Image 1 (cartoon, rainbow, N blue to C red):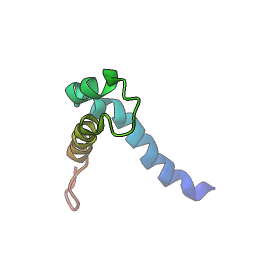
Image 2 (cartoon, rainbow, N blue to C red; image 1 turned 90 degrees about the horizontal axis):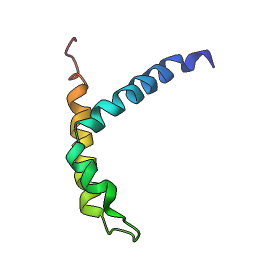
Image 3 (spheres, rainbow, N blue to C red; image 1 turned 90 degrees about the vertical axis):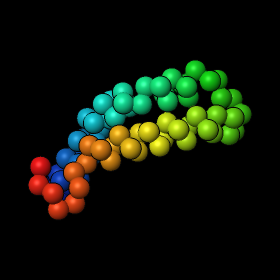
Length: 69
């Protein structure tokens, strides 16, 4: 189990970054959040906008491969 320390370190850093990344997508989160999506795919466009924004926010935080921080 001691070999899992590196994995948990990466997971923790991602979890710590989650609120900051989500905050960068406030408008998309607000559009998706209060929708009351009770049927499948009813809010698919809003979800896709939020997912795309979050993915972009995460990729901005990650350094490019081969670039020293």
